[in-house]
Length: 354
Image 1: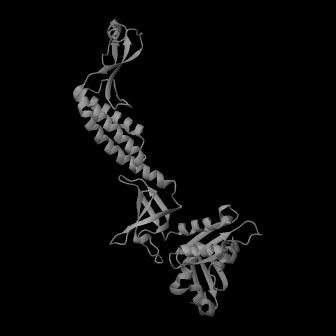
Image 2: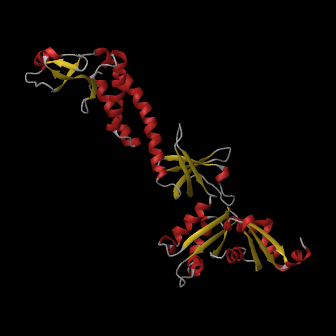
Image 3: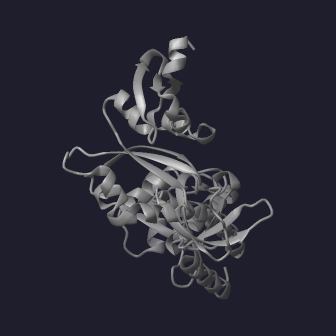
């Protein structure tokens, strides 16, 4: 590797470290290992050698690493050197000492810069993938802030997070949202997984985790653990139900979530562009919980059939439409929140045997 080329090579690594956050030392170590493998492939696997890149000049040096043995005991010249030969290299040596002998291999040195470039390109790609994975993995299942950079013809929204771009696909978008280039946006980081290529990053505006995290952000009692979110059910952009609980009977769980003059819940609703949110108190009694979840409807009775994982709910005729909700939404959300099938009927139908 010519000194000029070597210097340029080192400067390029320093730029990569600044721009990509990839350690220069890590890149150099990888190049050394790859060059060592290439050397052994060309000159023999049995050779005990080391490849070293000077951290100041970028020069590539190759060393044979051998153990000094008594001249008459020399057995394997690939890893051993006789005491007499060692004295010609170094004035003072001891039996058993390991010495490094620089190898003069100009052809290999000349190719080292080109090989190094290819290795670095591959390493940069790998390091970028690892860097992106690490940056996002620590924020998995949390809210992240980004800037909308572009929207393509398929309505994919490209969002930048500190120089890294992720895609919000239509399937993860809330119907209540309007996306505009240049605007800041909060999304829920639902999943980060390693793949053979770039990490799989799933961001969402319709995930129930977004609503859960917004509650944690806005309500200190949840952050501190005084109030616990037991369950969340959501039909993004339309309506959601959140079940909350506190072991402290003196805490008004619903009131704390709503906030003074409704400020806390209003901030959450505004972030979700008008999505309606019902807050219900979680009950240990399944019957009581199902009844509360079907609010604003008033329930006459609830019978839990455990083997069918079903709650059979009876309401008055006047409450049926409220209990079921528009297009069945209230019943669907109740089922999601309780994890049960919710079968709603009026007393009249039960008497008729329906």
